[in-house]
Length: 212
Image (cartoon, helix red, strand yellow):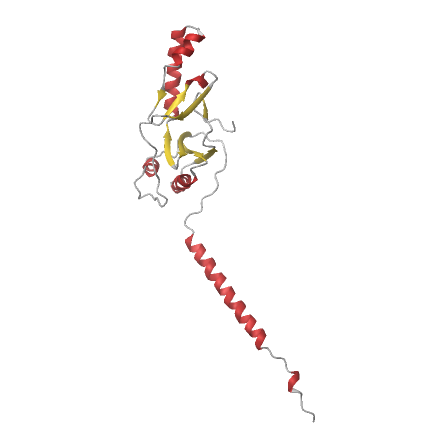
């Protein structure tokens, strides 16, 4: 009986080495994926543009600070001042413009440009002499943190009001913190992004005009 030639046998050592290396790589991928998943804290959905009947509370993210905008009160003051000045001017445009040049409608953070009011728009801009600065938000802020945004949300009526973040393009860091806190508080949230030099235009009723 003829003997089998041992040289024709297949050597599988190299193939097994490749399989072992692939198994090790797959384990590393699984471990890395698990670590990334464990570091994910909160998933925040992208705000969806929709019509809302809730009263807007405007907060401007500018200079990486939060600036509260009391648009309703500024609109009321502007309306009262314009009515008074118009009555005093008696239809004289020169007197009206002269009177407007000496009037300021302001709060601690903002002032109204009354020249735009004649065109039917309420333009609100930062005061050149603010009484107070904006509020900082630490990146790791939680509801146990003491800051303006947390205090606002703890007393926020979610049934009647909504948050509108007016975000300047130099302030995405503070925006992300404010967005996360509003999401955790389950408050209705709207987001409008503006260039740092762009004017904020509202209707005379105090509603932000977008897409202008």
